[in-house]
Image (cartoon, rainbow, N blue to C red; front, top):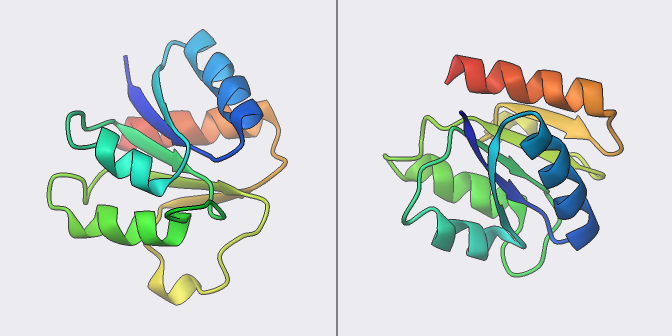
Length: 118
């Protein structure tokens, strides 16, 4: 079973995607922002991190930068799931970006592919 850290500041989105991912057999942990995600990652290294881009306290850009700078997390794939896609792809610290809203089938196919590669 693959483990996923799901990071989003909207509780409804966290709850919906958690339910969908768990029904597909994934183990899912959630965080409401990047700072909370970093704290959770001190004890567990997931197979995939899914993060929103626009969040309070620590946004997705900073979270991705920090993750890539941590040797134990640098190879964990990152899926950015956001309504406002990152503007600067030259400093891309993530693997895939899906723009909200995205259908469950495409979302789950992307998650499965990233977990398989990891």
